[in-house]
Image (tube, rainbow over all chains, first blue to last red; front, side):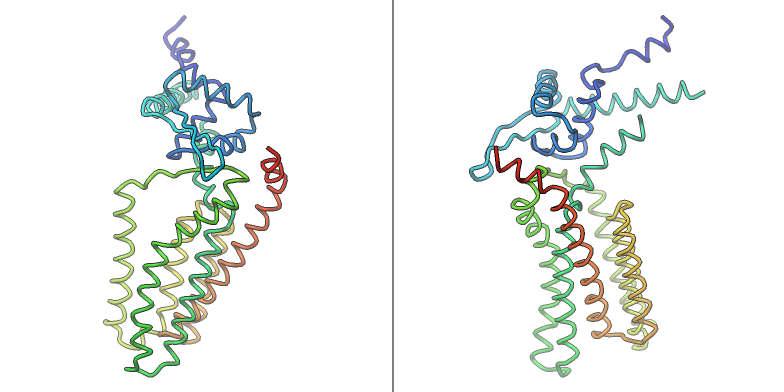
Length: 103
Length: 209
């Protein structure tokens, strides 16, 4: 495989999945967001969103805090520092690939 | 893909404005400021009433800046967050805060400088300066949203109209803030109504859980 093609496929697979990419992109813009906001913005089902958040948490990109606002349970999600760096690196890599293949 | 990703990153930043609450709160405070400016025009120069309002107006402006965000947050926690979720925003970078302060100071110095340089007749142009400055602020915070472009146009046109009618000084401020406040309340009210209508099912679903 040529180096260019290898670069194309050599992306962070944790972030590259479309649903997780949306989650990380949303969290990148803010300090934190709750589960309901992420569900509303991504359009994912609860189960699907939970699954992707678990994967991101496992990779160390997202931290999840279960807390309360008054009596209401709240699940707060935020990108970790490695998560922010990974997303920025992913964007830079994608931009590089697009620029190279734009002819 | 790149454009879509940028849009996904930008959407949470627009979420703060999605329910129109900030416009409603700021619009109400603008109307209050307009009332105080109007009362100023009725009070005699050198009177205790005028002196009192001279103190109240800056306090109100500072209070607007400090308190409006908290007031909006409080209303959002009851109205918006249970429907479409909660977002905590990142603190603006220091360079942005410094830029905002620099712009505010420059605007103040500019207005003061114009008044001193041109003389009392410059007071009739104060509404125009208000309109231009507020228009720029609306464009900046609107991030391309159509209704903020409309608010910017309303601000500018109000300023021009008042200046051409030679409505300056406190009365000019009162008229300008009154018009801007009304425009914000109408814009915020329509946005809130639209938001509540769009999310009526979400609130019911959240209540059922």
